[in-house]
Image 1: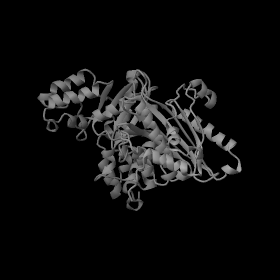
Image 2: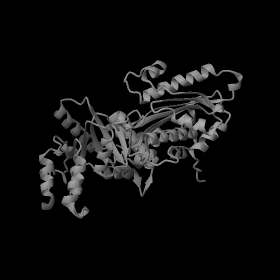
Image 3: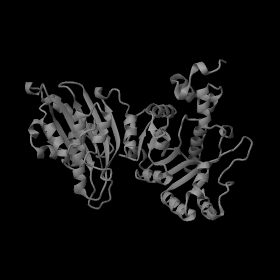
Image 4: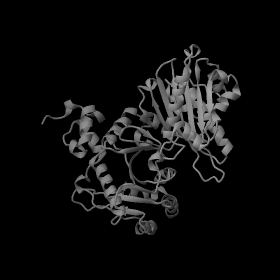
Amino acid sequence: MEREVLSTKRKALRINLDEHIYGTFAEIGAGQEVVRNFFQVGGASGTVAKAISAYDMAFSDAIYGSTGSGRYVSEPRLRKMLDYEFGLLKERLTDEKYRKKRFFVFSNTCSTLNYHKSNDPNGWMGVRFQLTPGGETNEVIIHVRLKGTDNIYQQQVIGSIGTNLLFACYWYFDQMDDFIDSLLDNLTTEQAEVDMIHVTGPAFAKIDNRLLALQLVKKEMTDATIFGANNMVYQPKDILYKKDVLCLRGRYRPVTKVNEDMMRCGIDYYKKQNGNTDNLVMLSEITLNNLSTDGEFDSKDFLDRADLLCSLGHTVMVSNCHKHDVLINCLDCYKPKSIGIILGILNIVEMFNEKYYKNAPGELLRYFGEIFSRNTKMLIYPYQPEKNKALITTATLKVSENIRHLFEHLKLNGFMVDLPGCDESVLQIFSPKVIQMIKLGEPGWEEMVPDTVADIIKEKFLFGYHQELTPAK
């Protein structure tokens, strides 16, 4: 049955009329935008135990303590708020009349557009809540990027998303697809973007946060999501801000020794240019197109690939940025210091294929102008058509005379750089062939992937691996 989309006022009123839902609203930064909805619809005395807005930083630190980073719109600040306020609820509301209450704390720390319109409007929101009186707590934390150019309007958006979040915690906790959809009820992605969600607690015991992150991208609530080797989902800007980003794009089905060599070459190049890798973040990026088969997404297949990448210590990015210029625009939103995209030379062949353009010189000039207007490089990994044949690099690649001037300009000015030092022994490894060998039980595929990856594929029977098909040694 299709979910009914309630207005913000109806959601607030339904919560107010539930005599068992009771708790605290703690909001800092942009004001008390969420609790205002509950006061305006009436009946708030049955829901609101306390509402607080510690707007001044000194008051905020005095109540919740310093986070050390000096950042007030941050996840650590939000967690301190949730910890402190829920502790007070349990400590102070102990009379008999509270025994049937399901306590919650809603907290947010948000920044709307400043007077000079020079900041990045965003916010962290979270709910810690009980589903049964006195029961264990559950928690949902999201990060929101606010859009538009009107401060007052952004405050209203905060109020709507916060109300949607609290309502979802009690009405959609067991229907995560509806939960995520409802976060932007009565809003559009032109007004706000949800780029991180993380859930914990017994109500979400069977939920993999990486799948929730994937849902945000699939539902176009954000362009990209990032998670690390510990399977924790991260807000992209927390990982990429002022960092040097190296991004390797691929299907990773499965991760092969070629993928690993491309990363190694990229890191070696960066280290040679900068002397160390202290500021480097390496991303293994998969687009939604590379996760689908005939338009369908296989969650298990996604997690299998994610697990293999994470087992190698990789930071994984999932995006809906099929084109390279769209990916650069997406990464640039997180304010990195520099961006490097590692590509195989065959990607460059496709990029400079005139059949894709009505006016190749003009369209390519605009395309690369969009990409390289940032501090961006394309780092090119060679291709070898057959063993013992010459490598194809940008130095040997033949392009049409019509666009050769542009191609040479990009090379000469360091926008496209050949990666030196590749391991020629792995250049004949191709993922489709590896998958075919695994499915058919053909020997030798183990030598084409990192040892850890081979072990996991066998242990978990991934990609059609069947032990009984493998010839005995």
